[in-house]
Image (tube, rainbow, N blue to C red; front, side, top):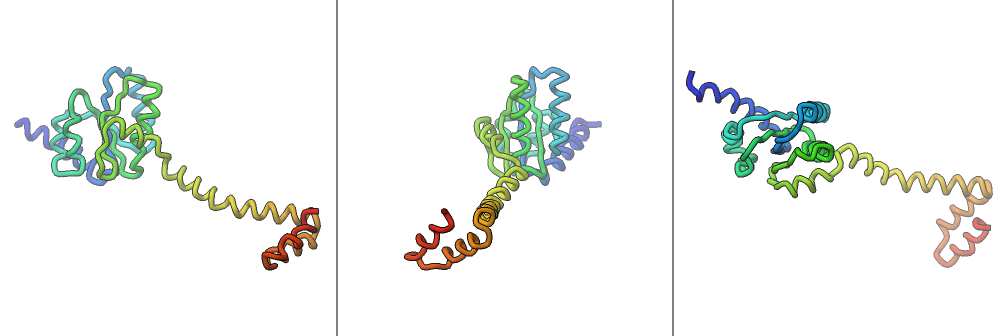
Length: 188
């Protein structure tokens, strides 16, 4: 069998993996122990990220004609690739988190949603919270004013009973000139 026939399935595997990818990150894994590498693979797998070591020439062939072709200059030395099809920032975030415990792991570069970033850019992207975190913060900020309003209304009701609630409602409906006089009984 010719060398090209042996390499074609590997290139096809890489091409299939990056076809629907939102992000692809290249890392230099030199110096990691077997235990560290196993822990890294487990962490990435749990986050839904595909992580695999390929030859640079194979990745170069697979990247040709795609958004990831710009990673070609970074394909030097040992390279592993982390691919995510669901969360664009997950590979950078998970790799950076792991690199804190294993300083030998080095992020070379990556492509996130079509934009190429070097190591410094990937470090910045790794600081972006996950989609779930951002949604929960948004929901919390939306609920906060409603919860505060409910708390104030409850305090008014407990403080003065129904008359305090009526005074609060009257203050809200009264013209600006009369508002301070209407608020005075509620505060007393």
